[in-house]
Image (cartoon, rainbow, N blue to C red; front, side, top):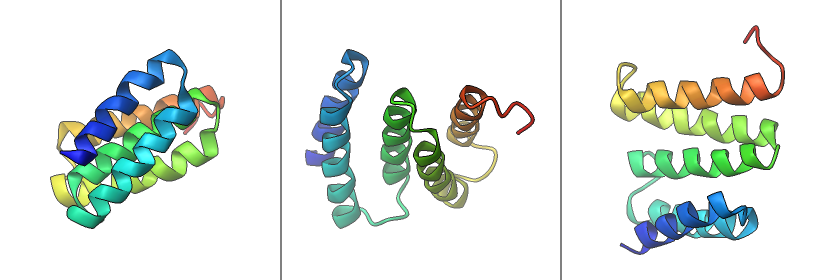
Length: 105
């Protein structure tokens, strides 16, 4: 519940442009999830994805892709390649690449 509360608060702050506060809350959420769920849990992947979306909004594309890679690794391992969350992560990664002008990737 603690991690979910941090997560939900960060989700509200991101659209308001409060990226630093959202990032701090996602960090708290992530730390709590690691302690309670372990590093390979799908909820950790969700937090990674949301952290990467904040970085994308800030134009920190390289760091966002690193975190999306971590998100993808967990999702592929736990959910499998055909899961909608995997497709969503591919879409998010493609959006970052598009913002960077890397259309061929």
